[in-house]
Amino acid sequence: MDDGTSEWQRKRATLSAKTARKEFALTEVEIIGAIRSGKLQFRHAAMHGNPYLRLLRREVEALVQEKHGEHGLKERQAKVEVGRINLELKRLKAQIASLEERRSKLTADLRT
Image 1 (spheres, helix red, strand yellow):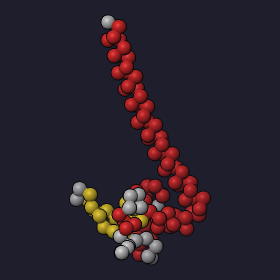
Image 2 (cartoon, helix red, strand yellow):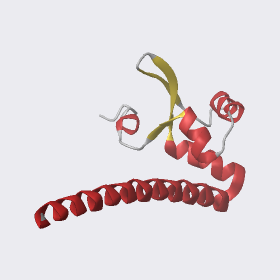
Image 3 (cartoon, rainbow, N blue to C red):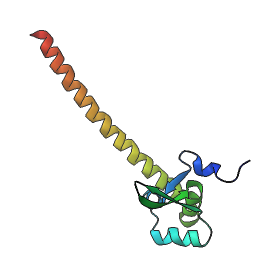
Image 4 (spheres, rainbow, N blue to C red):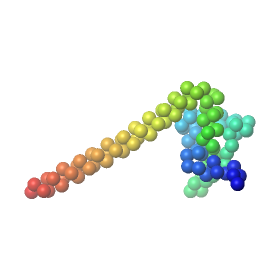
């Protein structure tokens, strides 16, 4: 029953060409070249009327591994994960500051 579409529908199995360029330091020329050579499959997609290419994450990772080796792929993935963690920490620190400010206002109101 698998007609080849299940991977395209799975969460985090695909990414946009723009995200592939950002996460894996690929150029648009490299992505188009890999599509033309058959190394990358793609699908056309659109969000809010703006078209973009969807790529399979496993194929992009294989392309990066071929280009930069296993170490290069792991290094790029680690950098992206560190960036996500830093962003989440920044968000949480702002939330903590907001909650502490609210707590101090409430405790000050209780004292008066």
